[in-house]
Length: 350
Image 1 (tube, rainbow, N blue to C red):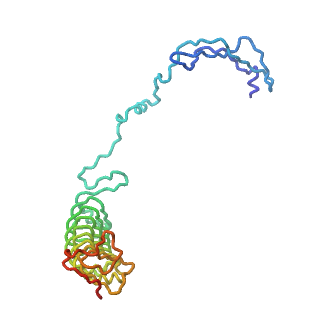
Image 2 (cartoon, rainbow, N blue to C red):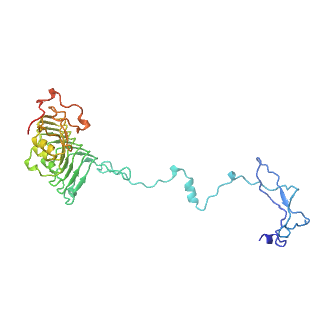
């Protein structure tokens, strides 16, 4: 191909260049003198190519300068921009952000509604105002699980709950008032961290897990012989209330029993102590009460699997237990002026 281009019949003709030549500027309104390449009018001998032997063209710079004519081209920043084939889209892109139309947004719910939309996707909706269960929920025959924990629900618990409930949790709210009759087949009950008051009905202890801690329950607990041995793996938490009186004997069947931070008085029932030492009851917290007796079996070591704490009562602890929580404090018993009866006996034969 290179040999064909070098052939004299196929050689391109280089004539003189005439017309305007856009040249780089050297200052405002000044043009540098161009260099003109031209072929002389007379024929120059063509030298043969060293390898192919074909003659080739010979060019030389023309020493005669050319004076350009016509207007100088405008700089790029002085030229007017041209819109593309979609002027509407170009004008929209040139508008300021505040002038563009905003997308349609859904209307905000009225503040009086009970259910509020979550602020972000995946967030949890919060329920407010008193809890009211309408007829569609009260008459629901298939409702088994009702979880309303950690909301802002106030007011009392509805007087009539669906009888088919197996799971009920309203912990972490602002509910108050006395407890109504609970469903008979309720297996999990969590009413903790509210402001419920009054007595605790016996129907609350029919659940395998009854969490009623951190409320304002008062009064003594009614002993019920029908509750003994009715629930396996029983967990009852009544801590941080204002319960008083003697400890009920039917709670000795619980596997984990938390009765601390109340106002219980009297001696600990023998059934409690026996079940702790036989391993039937694994956790028994009785600290921060006004108890005055603990019938400890003589010469019986505390099982390693048992968690027992009876500190800060109206008695000297019969056993030094290392299983007390940190919230129990370092004091082993109450001051004498706080106790109507103080017991200094550390062991009683069963």
